[in-house]
Amino acid sequence: MKCIYKGRSVFLVLVAALMLAGCSLQNNLYGFITSNDEDAQETQTRQEEAVRPSNIYDSEDTAVVVKKDYEAGTVQLQNIRTSRRYTLNYSGTTRLYNRHGEDISMSQLEEGSVVTARFYKENKALSYVKVISDGIYYSKLDDYSIDLEKGTLSTNGNVYNISGHIVVISDGKEADLMDVNQVDVLSIWGFDNMIYGINVERGHGYLRLQNETYFVDGWLEVGDRIMQKITEDMLLVVPEGTFDVTVSSKGSRAVQRITFARNEEMAWDLGSVEITVVQKGSIIFTVSPATAKAAVTIDGSAVNISKPVELEYGLHRMRVTAEGYDTISQYIRVAEPTASIDIELQKSEEESGGEKSSEQKDTSLAQNDNVTTSPSGTKTQTSAQKSNDADDEEESSSEKEGSSEEESSKEKESDADNDDVVSSDSSYKVYIDAPEGVEAYLNGNYIGITPTSFAKKAGNYVVTLRKDGCQTRSYTLQIDSEKKNVNYSFTELSKLED
Image (cartoon, rainbow, N blue to C red):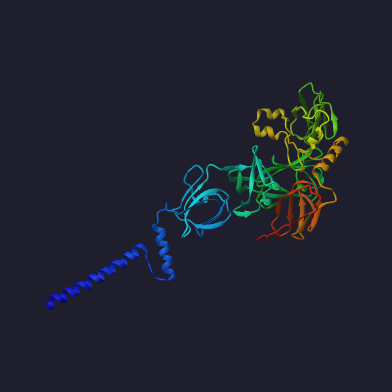
């Protein structure tokens, strides 16, 4: 009996040992480590994440993608309602979809996009991301206007509100709305008529002309995006990419193909360029309706449009007036031996005694000299372009509002009246206070070393700040018409890396 009892005791001891070993093995398999050691807890967390199915989540959010960190494996999001930011971890099990429901990689998820995000809140594990399909979305958008004062973005006949906490991304870095220039190409995302995210697909660089004396008061063109009068010491904001850049003056011109990089300055030395001889083109004008007694001036001088008009190659200001019709004022480019311009007049809404004359309507089409506008009811073609595509057709005539030294006195009076409408009293100024000691340019024209100022006039302006050894920056400003001074202070320019 003693032997049997001892045998049973040994058996029970073995069973207890096996049970303890089994529990230990089971705990290790499922990661239930009770140690307070930090390394052990971190191991436990990794094990839990590895075995958790990718479709498990306890939170869902509509948010803007702010930043991706591939090295850390994280994504920063911003809630579109509360603007609260938070960071989530992603892994190979995170499911990612574009707005069409197609699988994408994390590199294809664009910063600035509005997404539906599902995640496990306890350990901030991102389970699911899908770009919203029923919201606002534009890609490669280059035809838009931003009203900083009203907080709106207009495009394609639609007007959207801009969130006060909008996320703006440029070159993978967060930027300010004032950093967006009209020449930039954007992707935008929004929801319920509100824009929450902007990604600058193609930004802007800078062009400096050197030895430009011969071309001063002539014209500078960058592709079909920029046209501006040439001044001394100008620094022009230009779109990122490769363009044919043309300078013209006194009927002569020079062309150079230049590649502009984002946020970088390119200098073009005009002292050694090959200048083409003066060329002239024969322009045929056609006015409709034919019954309208239209008067046409080119560069302030009346021309007889009953026969072809000979004009030097380059830009010219055309003005068309007819009793009972809206005045048309635009810039045309002559670049062909023979060309035709079809002018369609529109009946004036206020043919007599209106509050605003047709000439005032004309001058209010554009406020900045470097903005190309296309007045309603105007159609311009060259004979060579009639057989080309729509893009070539648009390039045949460049329409631009501004002032000219050769304008008639009547035009100058109209411009003066318009200034009273859109600008504050000339005694008020816009001050650029900081950073100090940098070159300041207004719409490409040099205005001085900061602190400096310029006369206040309502409208949109581009202020560019430059200093040797630093990265050039530009800001879009919207100046109001209130009778008071305005002060701006910008951040210090970043030093360029050697």
